Length: 304
Ligand code: RIB
Image 1: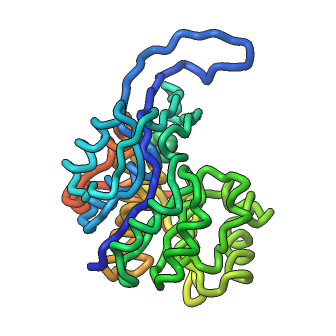
Image 2: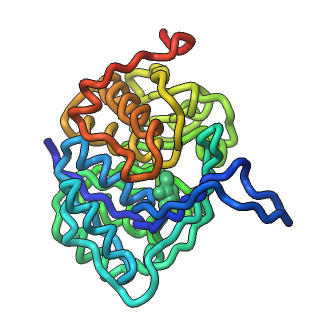
């Protein structure tokens, strides 16, 4: 199995359970408030580690975020490339709607935006071409990391979330796996239909493997050799936070293990179904043994 370096964000998630998302000018009381480890980077590292990958996390936190390291360590990730700086750890205010389990997220970037070219060069200097690099878009200098890692010959997986201006500076021809949702797909291609989003990406980047998550409609996978849809598993939706991160981590761990796209999508879909049945981000991500043995059924309207 190839080893994985995830250069990514780490956040302290303040999760408010609400009857409905707060509206402009409105003040409401939440039903509950809990603090969890989060950040798309941290969540994906936890998912990679719980999926059995050898994963190294690189990034930055403030002193207030040291408890995030405990979770990464206990999940089995290597944290020797995490730097603690003066200043605050990234934060997220997350509203979770009690009935639907849907969320909306407000970020404070904090230490996640303190990456420097020197730090990036030092981290990448410890890895060789056979390491897979995983990136999201919650840290600064993503475009620089892509260029430097590609120059070393590393294969790169990018989850371009959240969508920001900087993506126009990222050379997507250097990306092997692009994992995105429909909203991100529309922002990158102008298309709304899954097949058209993937088609537009492959027309520009023929070697890319596009993994498009479609929420309740499952997943669409497409590369130059194959394309398929995969459904979603029946589960109780408690909190959808980190469902996409769980999927990404599991899919990439399976790919690093040499599994086919179809098998990787199946395992990743099972893992994210289990994640959304629990509250919280990283803490809701299951370990591989649970994923392999859970009694899950595809929703009938999704069975191909
Ligand atoms: O993808 C979920 C994550 O997005 C949360 O953990 C939050 O920190 C934000 O980064």
